[in-house]
Length: 274
Image (cartoon, rainbow, N blue to C red; front, side, top):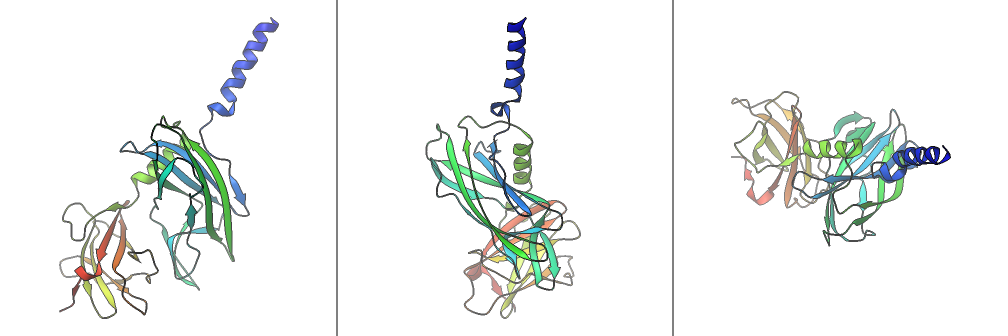
């Protein structure tokens, strides 16, 4: 009887032990926010996939890679990792917010940022070590630094809710698309140089299109302003450039109808307005 009771207790302990849990780092909590790493297994092309998950208390926000008129751009440093060749953070389309500080690109409540991981040795685990610097804002803005680590299994990880959230975020992230590409409902149809700015023509395929602009180097560009559509129905936006030398390229993210694309357009390939 004692032996059977002990065996039963050990079985329950095995089922509820950390070894059976989804592989994530502990939450690094700081005030109104918390951050952790997730082992998301394999991506759609068989690549190693992780994620940075951030949760926020009600009313608080954090920022996209290019915050807008104000805010703190996030910085993710994986240089302390082992068996890591590269880690590329993928940013879902943000919300656009407006207040007395201007127009900003933000996330509320929670956001999952997929991370495409390339190991030096694919047969070995990757020991991810992340130092994350990001900002959270309500009535005031607070800089946050979080340090988390997680071992990514060489065999593809453990499926679970956090991994599923990372794969969903990757599936809905902006897809690269060439300027003027004719296929699909979304496209950057044209870019025309006009003074110290650009007129951007877009095919949106759905109402409520949002356009986000950066330089090709990820630097600040004022938020695009909507213009009346062209006679052929193509939606138009005006993108102004800050003073100074023009950038080498524009990086444009277009979102509408639950889909999103990203177009990198070299400035020297943009025609001037007749």
